[in-house]
Length: 83
Image 1 (cartoon, rainbow, N blue to C red):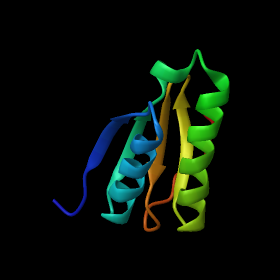
Image 2 (image 1 turned 120 degrees about the vertical axis):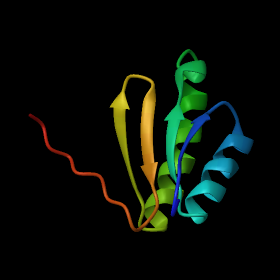
Image 3 (image 1 turned 120 degrees about the horizontal axis):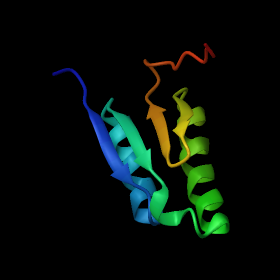
Image 4 (image 1 turned 30 degrees about the vertical axis):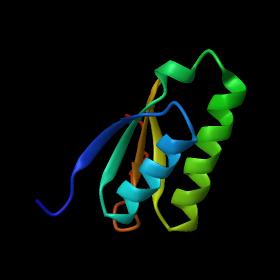
């Protein structure tokens, strides 16, 4: 396969580094944030770090549902179309 979709549970700063590594490898990341939903400050901090990295490297991210976020590397863009 040319790339993979990697599910990652976002719990700590080390998980943010894991997301960065996967994006650098060209993989898509499906983030599960359900474990940090009860801590909005921590969730905001970690998601902001992932978002900053993705956008800085011309990647993309989009909320899939209440506890899932899709993060893509630079060669993959997410179409935002409501049906």
